Length: 139
Image (cartoon, rainbow, N blue to C red; front, top):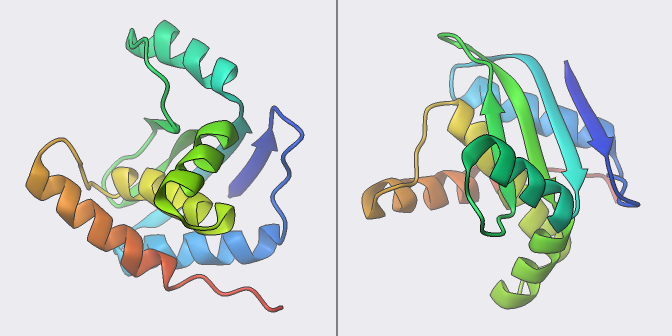
């Protein structure tokens, strides 16, 4: 089950297309999704979570809490739409493109990918790019 929640005025369009894409990501990594929750929020909401649960005091675009076991993956992924919007401007990509990157990033963490070292980050970027290409929405 894949759920989308919003703590801001942001609403994800084409939820079914995103669900199909996320299922495809999990399948392509030989994983099965249990419950996956995406919570779209603002900087203040995500910063509060960052401080309370991770004791980090910096802004971030995503925080994920994994509830995975073996090939069964799931959890809660909090995404700051403010950070994603700003990052899209910095990286000169559309908001839709940057949102796909961040959504894939969270799920890829649940699939076992890390990004702490330079090599891990490089592989994570490659995987994000690979998964973004899998997204299809009928126009």
